[in-house]
Length: 331
Ligand code: AMP
Ligand code: MG
Image (cartoon, rainbow, N blue to C red; front, side, top):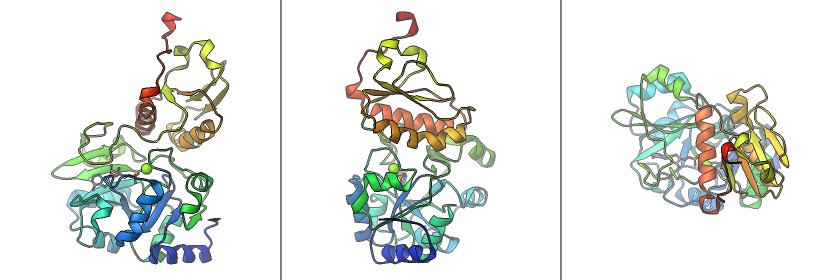
């Protein structure tokens, strides 16, 4: 059931979390599917609802520093620096976990991924729940992430006890993940850009995949995918004959001849493009198209997160890729 985030509904949602149920809620990145992070049985419901493999660890969401202390064993100085710059916000830190966090949350790892969301509904829910909230994106595993309450309802519907509607999410791509081991390692491009991180950390190591042999579980090469096959190609690489039954996910300009075109940002703004990415893909995926082509965006700032999601979405249908793409020279 989708409800507005009134104080009464937030209280009801917090009560559901406390009693071991599932609540979908908006964050500034995408919609999350939340359960009490300290209750292994509740967390198991997340994996069941999403059909998520148990080797893929979850991110724990906290509303304050006290809750952070509950889930991590220590907070190194570099974490302090990152938190004071980016929290609350879309940066996830991987830190040594406390004993209170059940192994199901971290897929048995000795570390836990944690963040403090900035969205007022997410914050209010966690604060009222009085427990840290484990929450992956509120979608079936591997499918497009939800950026609106109706995406959650369509994809997970009755598997969720309550869906809080906070409108469209601000960033539209997931949080950035940084592992704080001996030195910081970027594990996932996301809503906080590499350039922003570098202003605090200087340089950092990159292990952003996609990789068949990920350093940590969950960095799968195939993810974020629509059901319709998706391929990354600039418009000039797609012969006119193939355009009629295809959709095009354009960055700025509308190319000719496609059955349907969605433009991510007419002004070429990567922030706007990221915010529209999943919504545009959800829309295109409902049209029964033969294929969705996606235009590459510049790989800077949020463009890195956008390209990361597009590549994983495209590799999800790798076996189905038809070799009918030709370069302009071959046409
Ligand atoms: P999401 O599915 O968006 O909630 O993101 C969860 C992702 O965070 C996982 O797929 C992992 O890539 C990463 N992650 C979670 N916990 C850990 C951990 N303890 N160590 C490293 N990466 C983690
Ligand atoms: Mg996800």
